[in-house]
Image (tube, rainbow, N blue to C red; front, side, top):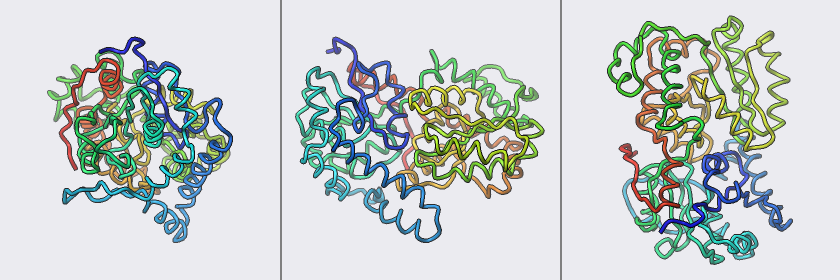
Length: 439
């Protein structure tokens, strides 16, 4: 039966960007925008303080990971508690984890109770992008359906509830590996829907017209010698329409470097700018440095870009303290982006927009699995020594390798996740995506 209001409650948490970025494309289906579970209007001050402690601790450890020896030791200790076990051999992995028990202890003490009482006044379907919200919604007897959107290509035991076989939580998985993983954790298969990661509609358009038009222009920039376009002319024309392998791009190559929520890789961005200094000054390359919603990262970039690349006018810093507005600006920047350079976070799934992803070093167990997924579909490539970016990057361009990565992402990474989630949650249409890659 279709929901009368045709809306749902959308709940995320303000911890990095991943959970809110996954929620942003679903706003149009939400009755009250994105509700932030750790900072909503009316939250108990003690509860907010508890959430803030967890957030600051993670960001601090992530930032100091770059320090030799000590940083790696501290981060490894933290990451151990959220590690993802090897998938093979397939076996029962339903034993609760330390991380999971930790959050349930907090829930028993009242975490999330007030929010669920508030939402129960209008018990629409509840869609959350963070597993702890699904936990406390079920614990405090939320009257509506509970859906959890998974934000990575593989997940730890913490994503499944303590008693998965009896839980009513339903999962919206980005790929088939996550579904299989959740089954090993004890979740009933009928409670898992492979929908794909939700991507922004403004980058897709009706019948993917925006996505295809942007990708067609991107392929020209990524294949300056026409190597890929000539070899795979029929494939490109089948999906994007006629394309001339001799056509040259009307814009400089545009690279967007996205710093993670902890801001830990800001120095890497400056080293990229330094290596590409000559090409930037010659207007062969444009750089977008994504500071996100962090004022400290924005100030760092503004202060240091001129020192690393004097006179480089076409290095843009993207920043907005409001996360929703930041996502809007970021998505707009992506439309004219040729290469997305980032760690393999939730942005891994943006390969579905036909964006080749150059991957910096993963941070955390889940990002290692995101990296493997990107490599498996051929849409991501590890960066080489950043000091020599001006050499290896253009070898990749001239070979057509990055153009191929763009097409592989377009073909094999799902791009209709938001629509699929709408269909499952609101319209009760259950049709899983055709996703072939299992790691």
